[in-house]
Image (cartoon, rainbow, N blue to C red; front, top):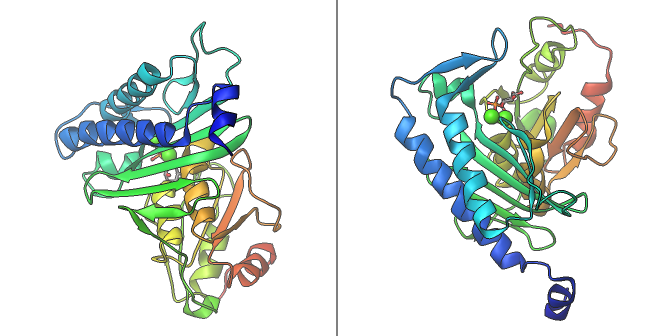
Length: 279
Ligand code: IPD
Ligand code: CA
Ligand code: CA
Protein backbone atom coordinates (compact mmCIF):
# COMPACT_ATOMS: atom_id res chain seq x y z
CA UNK A 1 0.00 0.00 0.00
CA UNK A 2 1.28 3.50 -0.86
CA UNK A 3 1.64 6.26 1.68
CA UNK A 4 -1.05 8.22 -0.23
CA UNK A 5 -3.49 5.36 0.55
CA UNK A 6 -2.93 5.87 4.27
CA UNK A 7 -3.41 9.60 3.92
CA UNK A 8 -6.51 9.32 1.74
CA UNK A 9 -8.14 6.75 3.98
CA UNK A 10 -6.68 8.45 7.07
CA UNK A 11 -5.46 5.05 8.21
CA UNK A 12 -2.70 4.99 10.82
CA UNK A 13 0.62 3.91 9.33
CA UNK A 14 1.42 0.22 10.07
CA UNK A 15 4.62 1.27 11.83
CA UNK A 16 2.64 3.40 14.29
CA UNK A 17 0.17 0.58 14.88
CA UNK A 18 3.03 -1.85 15.52
CA UNK A 19 4.91 0.48 17.85
CA UNK A 20 1.76 1.15 19.85
CA UNK A 21 1.14 -2.58 20.22
CA UNK A 22 4.76 -3.10 21.33
CA UNK A 23 4.47 -0.29 23.86
CA UNK A 24 1.23 -1.78 25.25
CA UNK A 25 2.73 -5.29 25.44
CA UNK A 26 5.84 -4.03 27.27
CA UNK A 27 3.72 -2.05 29.73
CA UNK A 28 1.55 -5.10 30.43
CA UNK A 29 4.66 -7.27 30.75
CA UNK A 30 5.98 -4.92 33.41
CA UNK A 31 2.72 -5.31 35.35
CA UNK A 32 2.90 -9.11 35.08
CA UNK A 33 6.55 -9.19 36.20
CA UNK A 34 5.63 -7.13 39.24
CA UNK A 35 2.85 -9.51 40.27
CA UNK A 36 4.69 -12.73 39.36
CA UNK A 37 5.54 -15.04 42.26
CA UNK A 38 3.86 -12.77 44.78
CA UNK A 39 0.70 -13.48 46.76
CA UNK A 40 -2.11 -12.41 44.45
CA UNK A 41 -5.88 -12.55 44.55
CA UNK A 42 -7.32 -15.38 42.47
CA UNK A 43 -10.97 -15.58 41.40
CA UNK A 44 -12.59 -18.56 39.71
CA UNK A 45 -14.57 -18.25 36.46
CA UNK A 46 -15.20 -22.02 36.70
CA UNK A 47 -13.82 -24.91 38.74
CA UNK A 48 -10.44 -24.82 36.94
CA UNK A 49 -10.69 -21.51 35.07
CA UNK A 50 -8.96 -18.72 36.99
CA UNK A 51 -8.51 -15.02 36.69
CA UNK A 52 -6.06 -13.05 38.80
CA UNK A 53 -5.72 -9.40 39.63
CA UNK A 54 -2.68 -9.46 37.33
CA UNK A 55 -4.83 -10.38 34.29
CA UNK A 56 -7.13 -7.48 35.02
CA UNK A 57 -4.38 -4.96 35.73
CA UNK A 58 -2.46 -5.92 32.58
CA UNK A 59 -5.59 -5.56 30.45
CA UNK A 60 -6.29 -2.09 31.85
CA UNK A 61 -2.77 -0.98 30.93
CA UNK A 62 -3.06 -2.37 27.37
CA UNK A 63 -6.43 -0.77 26.67
CA UNK A 64 -5.28 2.53 28.18
CA UNK A 65 -2.04 2.61 26.14
CA UNK A 66 -3.72 1.83 22.83
CA UNK A 67 -6.74 4.03 23.45
CA UNK A 68 -4.52 7.00 24.25
CA UNK A 69 -3.08 6.76 20.71
CA UNK A 70 -6.23 5.52 18.95
CA UNK A 71 -9.35 6.66 20.86
CA UNK A 72 -11.60 5.55 18.00
CA UNK A 73 -10.48 1.90 17.89
CA UNK A 74 -12.49 -1.02 19.28
CA UNK A 75 -11.27 -3.87 21.54
CA UNK A 76 -12.10 -7.49 22.10
CA UNK A 77 -10.27 -8.35 25.31
CA UNK A 78 -10.55 -11.51 27.40
CA UNK A 79 -11.43 -9.95 30.73
CA UNK A 80 -13.42 -6.88 29.60
CA UNK A 81 -15.06 -8.31 26.47
CA UNK A 82 -15.98 -5.69 23.85
CA UNK A 83 -14.61 -2.41 25.27
CA UNK A 84 -16.45 0.25 23.27
CA UNK A 85 -16.80 3.99 23.64
CA UNK A 86 -19.11 6.38 21.78
CA UNK A 87 -16.08 7.29 19.66
CA UNK A 88 -15.12 3.74 18.73
CA UNK A 89 -18.49 2.27 17.73
CA UNK A 90 -18.35 1.08 14.13
CA UNK A 91 -14.55 1.38 13.88
CA UNK A 92 -12.82 -0.84 11.28
CA UNK A 93 -9.97 -1.39 13.76
CA UNK A 94 -10.34 -3.92 16.53
CA UNK A 95 -7.58 -4.91 18.94
CA UNK A 96 -7.85 -8.49 20.16
CA UNK A 97 -6.16 -8.83 23.51
CA UNK A 98 -5.19 -11.59 25.90
CA UNK A 99 -3.48 -9.68 28.72
CA UNK A 100 -2.12 -12.87 30.29
CA UNK A 101 -2.05 -16.08 28.30
CA UNK A 102 -1.02 -18.80 30.71
CA UNK A 103 -2.98 -17.74 33.77
CA UNK A 104 -2.87 -21.14 35.47
CA UNK A 105 0.93 -21.21 35.10
CA UNK A 106 1.13 -17.66 36.45
CA UNK A 107 -1.06 -18.46 39.46
CA UNK A 108 1.29 -21.35 40.34
CA UNK A 109 4.45 -19.28 39.77
CA UNK A 110 5.32 -21.48 36.79
CA UNK A 111 7.34 -19.18 34.49
CA UNK A 112 5.52 -19.68 31.18
CA UNK A 113 3.08 -16.98 30.12
CA UNK A 114 2.81 -13.99 27.81
CA UNK A 115 0.88 -10.97 26.62
CA UNK A 116 -0.88 -11.33 23.26
CA UNK A 117 -2.16 -8.43 21.14
CA UNK A 118 -3.53 -8.75 17.62
CA UNK A 119 -5.03 -6.06 15.41
CA UNK A 120 -7.94 -6.89 13.12
CA UNK A 121 -8.81 -4.41 10.36
CA UNK A 122 -12.04 -5.10 8.48
CA UNK A 123 -11.97 -8.71 9.62
CA UNK A 124 -8.32 -9.43 8.78
CA UNK A 125 -5.51 -9.82 11.31
CA UNK A 126 -2.74 -7.45 10.19
CA UNK A 127 -0.51 -7.03 13.26
CA UNK A 128 0.49 -9.51 15.96
CA UNK A 129 2.59 -9.04 19.08
CA UNK A 130 3.34 -11.75 21.65
CA UNK A 131 5.59 -10.78 24.53
CA UNK A 132 7.12 -13.13 27.10
CA UNK A 133 8.16 -10.74 29.88
CA UNK A 134 10.32 -13.22 31.82
CA UNK A 135 12.47 -14.32 28.88
CA UNK A 136 12.13 -10.86 27.32
CA UNK A 137 11.16 -12.39 24.00
CA UNK A 138 9.12 -10.19 21.67
CA UNK A 139 7.50 -11.97 18.74
CA UNK A 140 6.13 -9.69 16.02
CA UNK A 141 4.43 -10.03 12.68
CA UNK A 142 2.87 -7.72 10.18
CA UNK A 143 0.70 -9.13 7.39
CA UNK A 144 2.85 -9.83 4.34
CA UNK A 145 6.07 -8.69 6.04
CA UNK A 146 7.30 -11.82 7.86
CA UNK A 147 7.78 -12.54 11.55
CA UNK A 148 10.56 -11.74 14.00
CA UNK A 149 11.78 -12.58 17.49
CA UNK A 150 13.62 -9.72 19.15
CA UNK A 151 14.18 -8.20 15.73
CA UNK A 152 15.53 -11.32 14.02
CA UNK A 153 13.60 -13.06 11.25
CA UNK A 154 12.08 -16.42 12.29
CA UNK A 155 11.04 -19.49 10.30
CA UNK A 156 9.30 -22.78 10.98
CA UNK A 157 11.34 -25.96 11.37
CA UNK A 158 12.39 -28.31 8.58
CA UNK A 159 11.37 -31.57 10.28
CA UNK A 160 9.92 -33.85 7.57
CA UNK A 161 8.19 -36.60 9.53
CA UNK A 162 5.75 -36.68 12.42
CA UNK A 163 7.85 -39.44 13.93
CA UNK A 164 10.68 -36.90 14.39
CA UNK A 165 8.49 -33.98 15.43
CA UNK A 166 8.03 -32.26 18.77
CA UNK A 167 4.36 -31.29 19.17
CA UNK A 168 2.43 -29.16 21.60
CA UNK A 169 -1.21 -28.90 22.59
CA UNK A 170 -3.52 -27.68 25.34
CA UNK A 171 -6.84 -28.48 26.95
CA UNK A 172 -9.93 -26.33 27.38
CA UNK A 173 -11.28 -25.50 30.81
CA UNK A 174 -14.25 -27.88 30.29
CA UNK A 175 -11.85 -30.85 30.09
CA UNK A 176 -13.68 -32.55 33.00
CA UNK A 177 -17.18 -32.03 31.59
CA UNK A 178 -16.96 -32.56 27.82
CA UNK A 179 -15.97 -35.84 26.18
CA UNK A 180 -14.49 -33.80 23.28
CA UNK A 181 -11.62 -32.97 25.58
CA UNK A 182 -8.63 -33.69 23.31
CA UNK A 183 -7.31 -36.51 25.50
CA UNK A 184 -7.78 -39.05 22.67
CA UNK A 185 -5.70 -36.92 20.25
CA UNK A 186 -3.12 -36.34 22.98
CA UNK A 187 -2.71 -40.09 23.46
CA UNK A 188 -2.62 -40.81 19.71
CA UNK A 189 0.05 -38.17 19.05
CA UNK A 190 2.06 -39.34 22.04
CA UNK A 191 2.40 -42.69 20.27
CA UNK A 192 3.28 -41.17 16.88
CA UNK A 193 5.50 -38.11 17.50
CA UNK A 194 8.95 -37.81 19.04
CA UNK A 195 7.37 -35.92 21.94
CA UNK A 196 4.27 -33.98 22.99
CA UNK A 197 4.28 -31.01 25.36
CA UNK A 198 1.62 -28.93 27.11
CA UNK A 199 3.00 -25.51 27.96
CA UNK A 200 -0.21 -23.81 29.14
CA UNK A 201 0.06 -20.82 26.77
CA UNK A 202 -1.47 -21.19 23.32
CA UNK A 203 -0.03 -17.88 22.12
CA UNK A 204 3.51 -19.00 22.97
CA UNK A 205 2.81 -22.43 21.44
CA UNK A 206 2.08 -20.70 18.12
CA UNK A 207 5.20 -18.53 18.40
CA UNK A 208 7.30 -21.59 19.19
CA UNK A 209 6.00 -23.26 16.01
CA UNK A 210 6.88 -20.02 14.21
CA UNK A 211 10.51 -20.14 15.36
CA UNK A 212 10.95 -23.89 14.98
CA UNK A 213 11.02 -24.93 18.66
CA UNK A 214 7.89 -26.99 18.00
CA UNK A 215 7.00 -28.66 14.71
CA UNK A 216 3.24 -28.77 15.22
CA UNK A 217 0.50 -27.43 17.51
CA UNK A 218 -3.13 -28.43 17.70
CA UNK A 219 -5.89 -27.41 20.09
CA UNK A 220 -9.68 -27.21 20.34
CA UNK A 221 -12.05 -24.56 21.69
CA UNK A 222 -9.60 -21.67 21.85
CA UNK A 223 -10.88 -18.09 21.82
CA UNK A 224 -9.93 -15.32 19.36
CA UNK A 225 -7.68 -13.61 21.94
CA UNK A 226 -5.65 -16.83 22.39
CA UNK A 227 -4.72 -17.07 18.69
CA UNK A 228 -5.13 -13.67 16.97
CA UNK A 229 -1.49 -12.58 17.29
CA UNK A 230 0.10 -16.05 17.30
CA UNK A 231 -1.79 -17.11 14.17
CA UNK A 232 -0.33 -14.19 12.20
CA UNK A 233 3.16 -14.73 13.65
CA UNK A 234 3.09 -18.44 12.75
CA UNK A 235 1.68 -17.79 9.27
CA UNK A 236 4.24 -15.10 8.53
CA UNK A 237 7.01 -17.46 9.65
CA UNK A 238 5.89 -20.00 7.06
CA UNK A 239 3.53 -22.19 9.09
CA UNK A 240 0.51 -23.92 7.61
CA UNK A 241 -2.50 -23.09 9.78
CA UNK A 242 -5.86 -24.80 9.24
CA UNK A 243 -8.70 -26.46 11.10
CA UNK A 244 -8.58 -30.25 11.58
CA UNK A 245 -10.18 -30.72 8.14
CA UNK A 246 -7.41 -28.73 6.37
CA UNK A 247 -9.65 -25.69 5.80
CA UNK A 248 -7.98 -22.26 6.24
CA UNK A 249 -7.92 -21.19 9.88
CA UNK A 250 -9.83 -18.18 11.17
CA UNK A 251 -9.60 -17.00 14.76
CA UNK A 252 -13.31 -17.62 15.36
CA UNK A 253 -13.00 -21.35 14.59
CA UNK A 254 -12.86 -23.91 17.37
CA UNK A 255 -10.05 -26.07 15.97
CA UNK A 256 -6.51 -25.05 15.13
CA UNK A 257 -3.66 -27.00 13.59
CA UNK A 258 -0.43 -25.08 12.99
CA UNK A 259 2.59 -26.91 11.64
CA UNK A 260 5.79 -26.42 9.68
CA UNK A 261 3.78 -27.58 6.64
CA UNK A 262 5.82 -30.76 6.17
CA UNK A 263 4.02 -32.79 8.84
CA UNK A 264 0.58 -31.21 8.29
CA UNK A 265 -0.94 -34.06 6.28
CA UNK A 266 0.28 -36.68 8.78
CA UNK A 267 -1.17 -34.70 11.68
CA UNK A 268 -4.53 -34.37 9.91
CA UNK A 269 -4.60 -38.13 9.39
CA UNK A 270 -4.17 -38.67 13.12
CA UNK A 271 -6.80 -36.03 13.99
CA UNK A 272 -9.29 -37.53 11.54
CA UNK A 273 -8.77 -41.12 12.62
CA UNK A 274 -11.48 -42.64 14.76
CA UNK A 275 -8.73 -44.59 16.45
CA UNK A 276 -8.95 -44.86 20.21
CA UNK A 277 -5.64 -44.57 21.97
CA UNK A 278 -3.82 -47.89 22.14
CA UNK A 279 -0.34 -49.20 22.65
C1 IPD B 1 -5.34 -20.70 28.08
C2 IPD B 1 -3.99 -21.07 27.52
C3 IPD B 1 -3.84 -22.57 27.41
C4 IPD B 1 -4.95 -23.20 26.61
C5 IPD B 1 -6.29 -22.80 27.18
C6 IPD B 1 -6.42 -21.27 27.19
P1 IPD B 1 -5.52 -18.45 29.56
O1 IPD B 1 -5.50 -19.28 28.14
O2 IPD B 1 -3.78 -20.50 26.25
O3 IPD B 1 -2.63 -22.95 26.81
O4 IPD B 1 -4.80 -24.59 26.63
O5 IPD B 1 -7.29 -23.37 26.41
O6 IPD B 1 -7.69 -20.89 27.64
O7 IPD B 1 -6.78 -18.81 30.24
O8 IPD B 1 -4.32 -18.83 30.30
O9 IPD B 1 -5.52 -17.05 29.05
CA1 CA C 1 -5.58 -17.30 26.75
CA1 CA D 1 -5.90 -14.91 29.53
